[in-house]
Image (cartoon, rainbow, N blue to C red; front, side, top):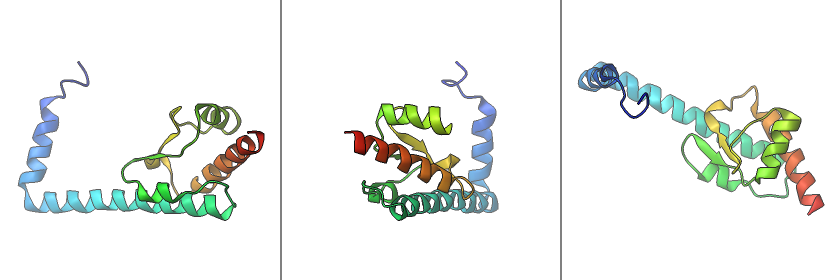
Length: 123
């Protein structure tokens, strides 16, 4: 019930923001800023993966949109990311791009590269 029936005050806040011209403009600006940040993190992740000479192509990371990116990593690879690098994602390789930032994107890319290349060599 906590998630299926959101409280009325949330809807009232949204209504207030969308009815006020200035608040709505501010909200659009903030949403655009968040979207642009995620796009730039996708670009950085791809650049770091390609710079390491990854055997996989990474154009899909920048072609996708939204808060999540599908890495193509297997469940076994995801488990290794968690065990060896304390980096977590869903077992289908989905990365929350909202959690990627300029301070951790290089570490993420290095860990992904290490795990992927290990599995490529062993297959």
